[in-house]
Length: 171
Image 1 (cartoon, rainbow, N blue to C red):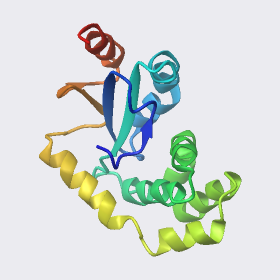
Image 2: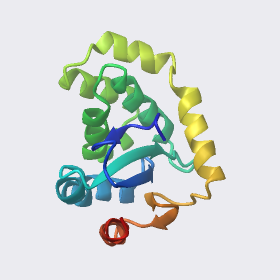
Image 3: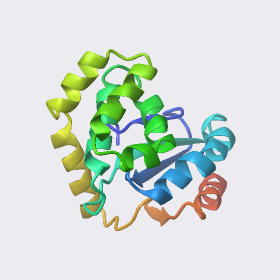
């Protein structure tokens, strides 16, 4: 878990692991519409920490390239801004014949070194890590996205707030 991108304090009493796929409309719904309130109410207040675990489902063609793009942005300290850009623009890059060019344009908009970003994505620098994350999710029994795990218990996004509150009450 220490290697996963995280939002929030490592000292937060509750840790939420989000298993998600960048090419997943329900994951986009969570990221764009539900996560802001979860971040505001629990993560920003120090009550919970949110970890992002890639789970690129094979039925989504853009999952792996997008996950690799997020990690390449992370190499330049911009994992979360790229995460947010990928979900905000899912419809655009999903419909594109050249999503990699769009990913590079998002990197440039975020102020990243575009050449370094493009080198990272074209070399598939993070391919093995993304594949390992997917395999770990399969071993953990994750079958859909987004799925959230708190204290070993799975939740969907509609159950997440209640799951965090139950976990906090038990601390």
